[in-house]
Length: 315
Image (cartoon, rainbow, N blue to C red):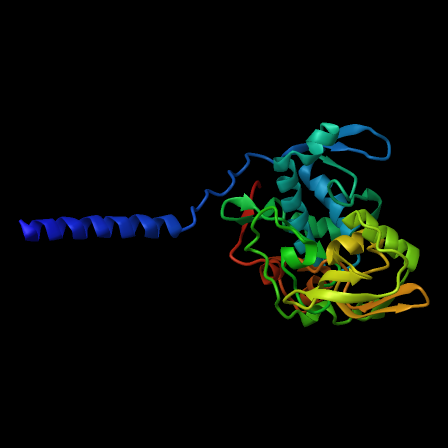
């Protein structure tokens, strides 16, 4: 009887371990279903207020033309097309624009993506056609198809570059060296200096924290992320998130939070840094230089996104 009891105990223990082991494995979702034909989507024109239906590839072509320099190599533009298509599908699924305008997408870069049909050329058309229907999938879902102009030579995680924590983004290849992002690029991307008036800094901090830091007299980097980007900035005695501060104080002037120096001079905040944008996902300058070296659009995407599949949704 003792032997039977011991055997029963062992069987129960093995079963328990098996259940725990299975529970740890992530559930693999099925990939999105292929579509029988190219979808027609609804577009809201933010300038005119008009709505119209447009084929997906026509929309993606105008997005790629607006988001990347149309004269760049076809394969760089093609990588951008895969991102644009993925972003569109993910945006439609989320229903963000539907809530605002009752359409799938809009022409606003804040709500959807940049959109400019007037910039379309043969290069852009070839790039979109080359990747027709292709989207990026991770564990059955569309990825967050982030990109920036240049990551300054090192990629960032969604948390570090965007302060994004809403969902997990394990497919983003973070904290990897990317010298291609600084090769053959503009001098003002390799290194830049921004001078922000003290009063503008004060208003930016107030809008983020709800606290008035007072007249600007000191500034310093309070926290850096793994890639070296500023995650928290100290203004006088108030700390604010780096990505939030960049948006509030001016993301055109403050090209990135990949800062190399922070100082207060003559009542102004003087920042020195490198790169342009948040540094999460694909670097457009990196894509350009990889394409010039003969890398395919898919190879470019897989440099910046890991454990993903590039799926063709429709013919």
